[in-house]
Length: 266
Image 1 (cartoon, rainbow, N blue to C red):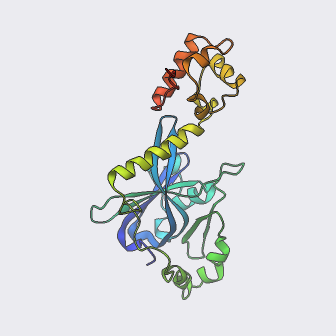
Image 2 (image 1 turned 120 degrees about the vertical axis):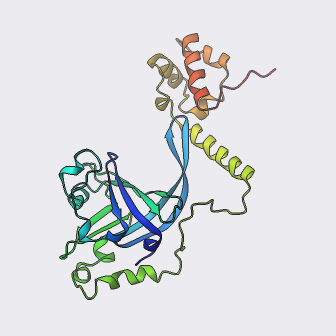
Image 3 (image 1 turned 90 degrees about the vertical axis):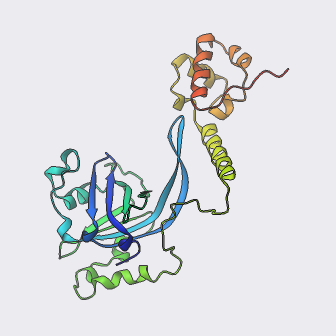
């Protein structure tokens, strides 16, 4: 078995529309992930999350897993592999670990084409009905997992040797902070700085203000929250057609994100 397969009870493939398919341990032939990183992700105007992302995912799912799946919505009406091959829209992978250990949610490289498919996901089957999935911005599935090997029952497991022998790959998913010497205070300060940077980059359009308030700000070249919080209430009240109602609206939106307008200097 390849990296991680022995430590998990199942993996759940989560699609863009939040449908999902769960693959049990006995149906996972090989499962390999690489280049795992922690990132700060904006979930909403006033919400961010520290997430794990994997820049490379490769897996083999045995033919026995190709069953009708009653997980959600219309998935129950089609075979699991049919759903995966038809849409190619995996956006997250939930790894359920053995022995009551903490599950791990991984975000994968996701970029849509005009048909709403993830262009970084490539999927195919071999002659024995096994499914192979590769998710990567740069790797090619036919080079990484060539058909002539996958269709040879005596050689198909050898294609994973290069993954197992990669000395640069860590042997455990980093569910803790990468910097183990970082104190709780330092970690919280780091997150605050990251949050502040994200908030400052939010555009005025993303604040979902009324048309009057948004247009008033844009006319004075206030394009982001970072620009806005450098202004005082008095500055905003000088804007043409920007009244007390618009000011209250702006103050409320900023308050939802934990920031405020600049205070008047005494």
